[in-house]
Length: 366
Image: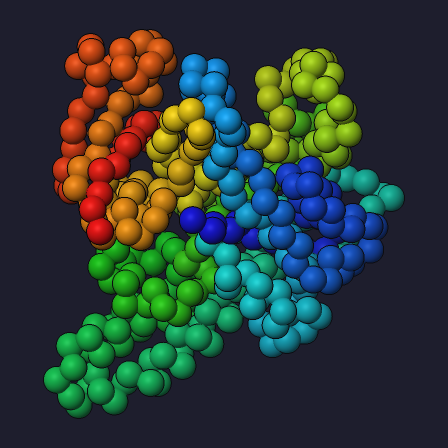
């Protein structure tokens, strides 16, 4: 599954520096606005100790972990929804992503110029929120105009429902609120899914702080947490400067010593990647054999045939059954044969809901 998280924020808040830490791809990180002109895409590995443990037991020819694409999107300014700055390009790039990682500057540094002349993460957040909301308002208004006549004069039930849902979202946006917080059921949201509304996407806020605030945060972080408490959004505290220093260290031992000195148990990048994976409502199942131990990305709630289809569409079309071993059982017993002998291999049909960590083998016939 090609899943993307877009890193967004005003110019000079630390987006590109953070992107460099996340990915082997190198975005330019410079002290001036719009240093990222084209979206940079990096493929990052999702940290998961389970695949390492499985590889130790199976000793495969290769290991294939889960990945997520991270897109570093050009900075935006007031008026982007009307094409100001790099607005149209920015909004087009973010529309293609599955979730938003919103970086907010939460540190003081006179040597790093802020596009608006002062540090205020709440103002910065509201600028981007407003631009995304205005763009969505334009999109939703055009859809209302398209379906209004059919909804009011015809017998098209879908048109009536679309008009109703769009009107609710339009009113919500006009109140300065994002579409994701509108009171709509999952069924209602299906009627606007094709619009790919920018403020419908799940969001995570990254407070980019100085080294001294990386453990407990600071007054800027407190303001951000208070401002987003009704959004059901995660807030992570990360120092892009520290992460860039960690990225330059060559060995795992050096990185751990560096983290220990700072009072941290893991890097902010690792926390961010795992949080992004969760933000997208994803789960992992594994296939484990001598040729390959591999992690597969699925959406939570997938049935066994849907999970099989992630490997190949033929697996889903011709699905017969799935042989399933729980990760904990495999690690405890050591081999597939031992799991079979202990009765820890179950045969599951088309209605089985795949659980995170399942080790699976599919039987199919096309």
